Image (tube, rainbow over all chains, first blue to last red; front, side, top):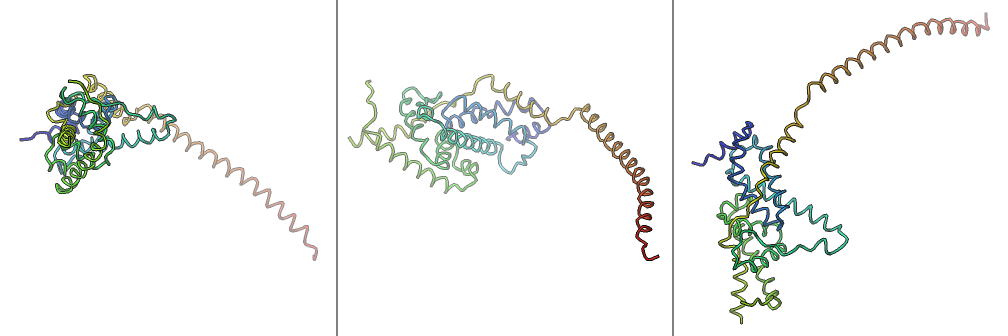
Length: 187
Length: 97
């Protein structure tokens, strides 16, 4: 039996051990999701901090309408998207292109043999619209079931499937254009 | 050639399969706790501040009361004088008597 709602209830009562317990259960999920959006470790930590501060602040408002996991992922997605909006706004006012260009992102957990491919994937992910990006990150990077992704995004499973189809089609098109220009690495 | 391209595209799209979750730094929870404490402390109003606010309100009411009292007494004196003055005015203009 999932006892996570009880942990959230304890946090609302001011129980510090319960807060640490929830952090232990969810920090990697929150951080991994955040880093998929920001492609930057420091920014991902800032988002993770904001998410857990929000969890602490709004624990008393959690009524169990969704699962704790869904609730936390939803806060993470919203916080990440807001962060990106703020960052894009400040990039708009930057004077040089050097400030805007994001370096190639190496996900800390990717398998060594897939490192180069994942760098390209994350570069392409940045070009997707918010909803497609979210559906892709939650489904293929966080590896969540479609039903949970639908709950987090407050939409239907069908809508999630449609977003994923469009995301993959868009990524394929961009990758097809990229293919002739890729670096050939010597084995 | 086409097969190679398709394979490459597929490899990119599935490049995160089998990956481990990235982990935050060990010190992150401490930073979160500090932030939470900061936010919680902000909600508590110190008793000394409440006392100062109460004293200020009482002082303000007292000053208003004294000011009103003084205003009334000044008004009473000046209205007596005004009555004499207005009588003079009236008598001065009794030109038909």
